[in-house]
Image (cartoon, rainbow, N blue to C red):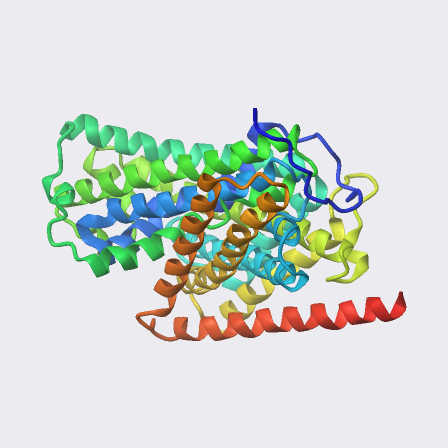
Amino acid sequence: MEPVLAPVADAAPSGLRANILTPMETLAQSISTIAPTTTPTMTIPLVYSLAGNGTWLAYLIATGAIILIALTISRFARYSACSGSLYTYVATSLPPVCSAMTAWALLLAYLAIGASTAGGFINYANVFLVYFFGKPISTVALAVVCTGLCTFVAYQNVQISTRMMLWLEAASVSLIVVVLALLLWRHGVHVDGAQLQLRGVSASGVRLGVVLALFSFVGFESATTLGAEAMHPHRTIPRVVIQSGLFCGIFFVVCAYLETYGMAAAGQDLGQSNAPLRVLASLVGVDVLGSLIDFGALVSMFACTLACITAAARVLLRMAQNGMAHRSLGVTHPRSATPHRAVLVTGALTLLPVALLSARGASGIDIYGWMGSLAVYGFITAYGLAAVALPLYLKRNHTLSTGALLLTIAATVAMLLALAGTLYPVPPSPYNWLPYFYLGYLLSGVLWFAVSSRRRTTLA
């Protein structure tokens, strides 16, 4: 029998409505933050341009790294159920400054992913507007529409938002599965020797592909922010964290393999394609599904932005309750029991970079890439610190085993390698400036934590 650990010290009641989210609704939060539809349509071609026939291997390795982190996070989630997510986990074992770093890193990560997918929403929305009406509309207006609607839904009711995310994402993924199944049915199940033999693949290409493939998974742990609202959270959250990483990992590996195979059969370069699923849909004779998948990518972007605002608001709520943000953000709505003020703030912060970049002429694809790359730094920081904190927590409760220690070492090394991959070789501008921006942001958060802690000590 597994020993009973002391529960992670949750804060005072958050004001969120407890036991209202089913396991499927909780799973929807993590799945929607990953936005699995965007990977086959936008990210896999980018990975292919680096890893070539090793794209499936890059995703397989990335899946392994994510499973290591998922197992680490799930160990904490067995004993903690609150909105603080990884921030609360790190606070149990590492110095307060580390928990502050985790909180600020996680907040930025969710906001940046939300802004990234809002940029993707702008891109696909204008594609459809040009197709149906012959001209696009203001990208700033589209940014306001996307983040405004997401903020409104997140403000109203967490059940409405999770159910909406679940159905939107399920419909989009189903269309992709249909096209890939038709590809196998029309062309038969063949072993692609070029892929399995890694023909023309270099080790450096696969390494860089793995780093980019990790971008497909970021946010898979966001269900932990619903710990105060999920039914049976100590059982549900650990399962959801592992399920989301595993399900999406298998889906991505299969998509990478079949897209590479299908695009080769179509005589096109996957790395140069802006709409590979549309090409494959045409190849199997169902052109209409290509357009529907593009529309699915549009709604998946919307669902991801909604999921990120939902998660970021709950992290900000916990930060406010712990004195790291203004205390007015640490309350919930008396009727809907949502962190309404935190939702409004995170919605505005999600909109701000998208609107500013759009006003300066940046395209939706550029915003997707820039903000998504920035988010990776926040997630790597939070994942890495959580991995470091776990063995200290287990040791304090006299339950640290050799297996758990090896798990946390492997997870920590995986995050360090991922971080190194984002820094070298030095990426082109403006990506080369993102690490400096992130470091400045993180140092500002730590400084604010030090000042606010001293102020609270003086008042006490």
